[in-house]
Structure formats: C-alpha cells, structure tokens
Image (cartoon, rainbow, N blue to C red; front, side):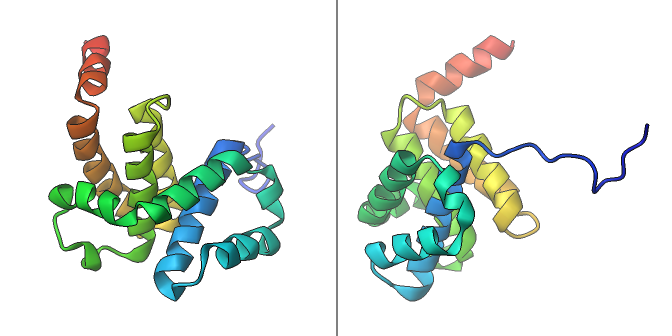
Length: 158
C-alpha cells in the first residue's frame, strides 16, 4: 500500500534535540532583543506546547552557559569563520554558540553527535546552505579542541 507524503510519520524528536532547539531559539531571541534570560525562558515555555517534551536540564545548561560564555565561545569560533562574526546570520550564530559550548564543555557527548545535532537544527531553522557552513565551522573547532577524539573516529572508519 502506498502512503501519501502526508500519511508518512515523521520521526519524533528526542528530548535532547528539543532542548538544543529551544536553546538555539533562546540565543536567537537574546541576540535580536537583548532581553533578559528569565524573560526569554518564560517566553519559550509559554509559547510552545512541546517545551514540556524537551530535556529541561540540558536546555538550561546549554542556554544559560552559552549566554554566560558567549564572548569566549565567539573567540573560539572566530578563527574558523570565513567572515566576520557580525556577518553570520543570527540563527547560524546561535547554532554555532550551542555547538561550541558543547564541544568545549560537554566531553561526555561525542563530537560527532554535537555536530550532527547542529547540522539538523540548521536544516530546520537556518538558511538554505546554513547547515554546510555550521558543519564546516564546528568540524574545524572539533579538530582543534577534540583532536584525539576526532583522530580516533577517523581511524575507526578506515
């Protein structure tokens, strides 16, 4: 039996993916409005019924720490950008901040998972080729900050 595209089920997002998406949305809002973190978190909670399905602990860890460390994260990302940070669209900038935070501060999460999650979020929220840009930047950062893990992953594939 053939199913129409509408009848096919889309895979459910994991609670961790949802947490990352909300963190990106919060960072995006922060960049555009400069609003306080408590107001942004309240807005995210109130504006989406799917917030309850997000991993709240992960959301809070990423969102609050990426905001707190935004400047050092931007410094870590800067050598890997092909343009000035201000010229990166705010959605991709938010995704890069989330990815950079995780690469630098969440060693228990494999770098490939972090990059894949960032790519998928960029496909959902970013521009047409934004996912390629995000992939390239985070790949370079991973090579710098997780060189042993990246090398081990590449050796496994051989």
